[in-house]
Image (cartoon, rainbow, N blue to C red):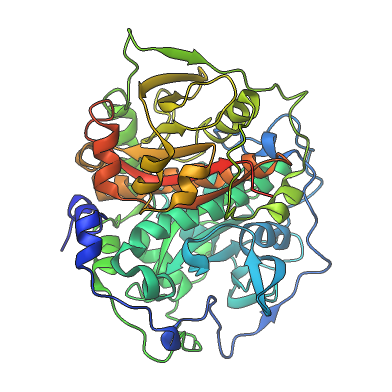
Length: 513
């Protein structure tokens, strides 16, 4: 049984460790990027997804469950089909070297798409009460259960008010093998990176539609496993996201019994390989009950002062940034931004404007609407920027301070070093800015347990997703997430970020023509 600190150490990359790895991808055993049930009935919502028109830069800048002021007043229940489409659906098809490729709404490591969405609903728009699985390829929903099971999730969350009042709560899961085929034991990290980018979209579309929405990381895992009919050795729940309000869940006496289900699924590939460390790490972070979930959340309020990371030195060299205000910011709608989002493969060395840089950083890092974060506790991650080409800002490594929109200079940097830190990928050094989200894993796990590690990775994943959206809201910018040498990045940012290690990396700038 491994704790999160041991897991993190065992899956950290260094040049030496990568050289010692003896591993080749078996393309003949590549898993399909989606889950297919053999015999379940399906439900197809009426009409096409309704593209949200709220500006992306407003939709991603929320730090609590409430929608932004510019969002419309909703005229009904959340549109489950639209929410799932813009979070996890297929949004574009491209022909690359003579082959058709389908791309989904949110970025995913290796384009392996191992995160699935389930909807647990009452009466909600076209949907009758039930438990549904979203099929991204068709836009249809597999019907796992009929009846109103929202009370199961409310109880699992410790009767969290948002869950107990929402007409629909989404459950994000990871089917491990779909990512482990390439990334092996590191998949547990990727589960939260990739569910984070997906939930960044889900939150943005929900908030852009005027609905309340927030991430619930604290919940009893086993009741959710049973409700969805999962085997945690293969697939496990990661987060809950209640959307909407004003629809109280039924009393416990009115909630149907959760009888065991085990629907047949089409095999993902011929010979799936088991990586026990992944499921083991997940099991060590489980919460046993709704009361345990509430106690875990309460610990954040007690430890908030101690958990604030990366305090600014009084004598630090600081640069004030000037993000554009809401009136002059890009008005590109969140739906169009999600459809435009790509993964930039080549960058121009041409500088980006300081205001665009400031605006992307300001909107993406205002705080994640999650159950554990409240009051003085903004989150568990800090933000460092390797600036290579921003007009008016000297190249260098900076800590970015959300809220005050300040850069605190740490050291010099160069493009060659930036590429080396990112597994030797020169394209990262070509970008105008590299954004590292970092956390003190030892401190997080000591204070908040193995579940705290989940949350740190998830927070970094959601900010990563918001960086994508804030970047692609600007016509002239492009970006992409990358992986990195954990140990070398940590050493490079020390002693300023002493004890902190990278969670995610995003590079953005002007795409090469």
